Length: 155
Image (cartoon, rainbow, N blue to C red; front, side, top):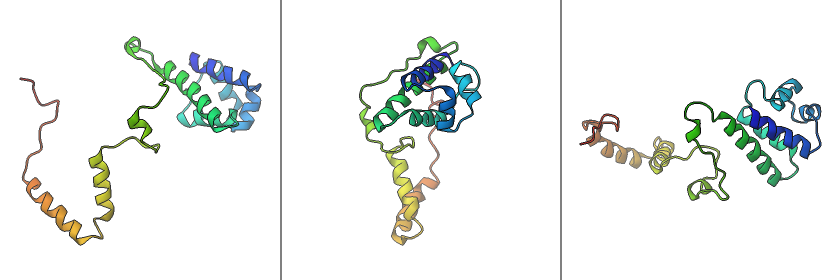
Protein backbone atom coordinates (compact mmCIF):
# COMPACT_ATOMS: atom_id res chain seq x y z
CA UNK A 1 0.00 0.00 0.00
CA UNK A 2 2.95 2.28 -0.51
CA UNK A 3 1.56 4.29 -3.43
CA UNK A 4 -1.82 4.77 -1.74
CA UNK A 5 -0.12 6.01 1.43
CA UNK A 6 1.84 8.57 -0.62
CA UNK A 7 -1.36 9.74 -2.35
CA UNK A 8 -3.17 10.06 0.98
CA UNK A 9 -0.23 11.90 2.53
CA UNK A 10 -0.12 14.25 -0.47
CA UNK A 11 -3.80 15.12 -0.01
CA UNK A 12 -3.29 15.66 3.71
CA UNK A 13 -0.48 18.11 2.96
CA UNK A 14 -2.38 19.82 0.13
CA UNK A 15 -5.40 20.53 2.33
CA UNK A 16 -3.30 21.17 5.48
CA UNK A 17 -4.98 18.46 7.55
CA UNK A 18 -3.74 15.82 9.92
CA UNK A 19 -5.19 12.36 10.42
CA UNK A 20 -7.21 13.42 13.48
CA UNK A 21 -8.96 16.18 11.52
CA UNK A 22 -9.54 13.81 8.62
CA UNK A 23 -10.94 11.13 10.95
CA UNK A 24 -13.41 13.59 12.43
CA UNK A 25 -14.41 14.95 9.01
CA UNK A 26 -15.03 11.60 7.31
CA UNK A 27 -16.14 9.62 10.36
CA UNK A 28 -13.47 6.93 10.11
CA UNK A 29 -11.29 5.69 13.01
CA UNK A 30 -8.01 7.56 13.29
CA UNK A 31 -5.98 4.37 13.75
CA UNK A 32 -7.18 3.06 10.34
CA UNK A 33 -6.24 6.36 8.67
CA UNK A 34 -2.82 6.27 10.35
CA UNK A 35 -2.32 2.71 9.09
CA UNK A 36 -3.24 3.79 5.54
CA UNK A 37 -0.95 6.80 5.76
CA UNK A 38 1.92 4.52 6.81
CA UNK A 39 1.11 1.84 4.24
CA UNK A 40 -0.14 -0.79 6.71
CA UNK A 41 -3.37 -2.58 7.45
CA UNK A 42 -6.24 -3.67 5.27
CA UNK A 43 -6.70 -1.93 1.93
CA UNK A 44 -9.45 0.69 1.70
CA UNK A 45 -12.72 -0.23 0.05
CA UNK A 46 -14.19 1.72 -2.90
CA UNK A 47 -16.58 3.39 -0.45
CA UNK A 48 -13.66 4.57 1.64
CA UNK A 49 -12.00 6.10 -1.42
CA UNK A 50 -15.15 8.06 -2.28
CA UNK A 51 -15.60 9.19 1.32
CA UNK A 52 -12.00 10.42 1.49
CA UNK A 53 -12.26 12.22 -1.84
CA UNK A 54 -15.45 14.00 -0.75
CA UNK A 55 -13.98 14.96 2.61
CA UNK A 56 -10.99 16.69 1.07
CA UNK A 57 -12.91 18.50 -1.65
CA UNK A 58 -14.93 21.66 -1.86
CA UNK A 59 -16.10 21.35 -5.47
CA UNK A 60 -17.25 18.57 -7.80
CA UNK A 61 -14.08 18.89 -9.87
CA UNK A 62 -11.90 18.44 -6.78
CA UNK A 63 -13.88 15.36 -5.79
CA UNK A 64 -13.14 13.82 -9.20
CA UNK A 65 -9.45 14.74 -9.09
CA UNK A 66 -8.95 13.50 -5.54
CA UNK A 67 -10.84 10.29 -6.18
CA UNK A 68 -8.82 9.69 -9.33
CA UNK A 69 -5.51 10.12 -7.49
CA UNK A 70 -6.55 7.82 -4.63
CA UNK A 71 -8.02 5.19 -6.96
CA UNK A 72 -5.03 5.24 -9.30
CA UNK A 73 -2.60 4.78 -6.39
CA UNK A 74 -4.77 2.01 -4.94
CA UNK A 75 -4.86 0.17 -8.27
CA UNK A 76 -1.10 0.49 -8.68
CA UNK A 77 -0.65 -1.05 -5.25
CA UNK A 78 -2.79 -4.01 -6.33
CA UNK A 79 -0.54 -4.70 -9.32
CA UNK A 80 1.69 -7.24 -7.60
CA UNK A 81 2.57 -10.81 -8.33
CA UNK A 82 4.00 -12.80 -11.23
CA UNK A 83 2.08 -10.97 -13.97
CA UNK A 84 2.45 -7.47 -12.55
CA UNK A 85 5.04 -6.48 -15.15
CA UNK A 86 2.48 -7.03 -17.90
CA UNK A 87 -0.25 -4.86 -16.35
CA UNK A 88 -0.65 -1.28 -17.42
CA UNK A 89 -3.01 1.13 -15.69
CA UNK A 90 -3.58 4.23 -17.73
CA UNK A 91 -5.65 7.32 -17.08
CA UNK A 92 -7.16 8.50 -20.33
CA UNK A 93 -7.69 12.23 -20.87
CA UNK A 94 -11.19 11.52 -22.16
CA UNK A 95 -13.51 8.59 -21.55
CA UNK A 96 -13.99 6.06 -24.31
CA UNK A 97 -17.28 6.59 -26.17
CA UNK A 98 -18.87 3.42 -24.78
CA UNK A 99 -18.03 4.50 -21.22
CA UNK A 100 -19.00 8.13 -21.76
CA UNK A 101 -22.40 7.02 -23.03
CA UNK A 102 -23.13 5.04 -19.87
CA UNK A 103 -24.63 7.36 -17.26
CA UNK A 104 -24.96 4.83 -14.45
CA UNK A 105 -22.78 3.22 -11.83
CA UNK A 106 -23.80 -0.23 -13.01
CA UNK A 107 -21.70 -2.24 -15.48
CA UNK A 108 -22.53 -1.91 -19.15
CA UNK A 109 -24.87 -4.58 -20.51
CA UNK A 110 -25.49 -5.93 -23.98
CA UNK A 111 -28.45 -4.64 -25.93
CA UNK A 112 -30.09 -8.06 -25.69
CA UNK A 113 -29.89 -7.91 -21.90
CA UNK A 114 -31.54 -4.50 -21.92
CA UNK A 115 -34.23 -5.83 -24.27
CA UNK A 116 -34.90 -8.81 -22.01
CA UNK A 117 -35.14 -6.51 -18.98
CA UNK A 118 -37.77 -4.42 -20.80
CA UNK A 119 -39.69 -7.56 -21.74
CA UNK A 120 -39.57 -8.81 -18.15
CA UNK A 121 -41.09 -5.54 -16.90
CA UNK A 122 -44.08 -5.72 -19.24
CA UNK A 123 -44.57 -9.47 -19.64
CA UNK A 124 -47.19 -9.89 -16.91
CA UNK A 125 -49.40 -7.06 -18.17
CA UNK A 126 -49.37 -7.38 -21.96
CA UNK A 127 -51.22 -10.40 -23.43
CA UNK A 128 -49.96 -9.79 -26.98
CA UNK A 129 -46.39 -9.70 -25.68
CA UNK A 130 -46.97 -13.04 -23.92
CA UNK A 131 -48.19 -14.58 -27.18
CA UNK A 132 -45.22 -13.17 -29.12
CA UNK A 133 -42.77 -14.55 -26.54
CA UNK A 134 -44.51 -17.93 -26.65
CA UNK A 135 -44.25 -18.03 -30.46
CA UNK A 136 -40.57 -17.08 -30.28
CA UNK A 137 -39.73 -19.60 -27.57
CA UNK A 138 -41.55 -22.59 -29.11
CA UNK A 139 -38.86 -23.53 -31.69
CA UNK A 140 -36.10 -22.84 -29.16
CA UNK A 141 -37.42 -25.43 -26.69
CA UNK A 142 -36.23 -28.37 -28.79
CA UNK A 143 -33.10 -26.69 -30.14
CA UNK A 144 -29.83 -27.71 -28.41
CA UNK A 145 -27.59 -25.04 -26.96
CA UNK A 146 -24.44 -24.27 -28.99
CA UNK A 147 -21.16 -25.39 -27.44
CA UNK A 148 -19.26 -22.86 -25.38
CA UNK A 149 -16.11 -21.28 -26.79
CA UNK A 150 -14.01 -23.53 -24.53
CA UNK A 151 -15.60 -26.66 -26.01
CA UNK A 152 -15.12 -25.61 -29.64
CA UNK A 153 -11.82 -26.90 -30.96
CA UNK A 154 -10.04 -24.92 -33.70
CA UNK A 155 -9.74 -26.72 -37.01
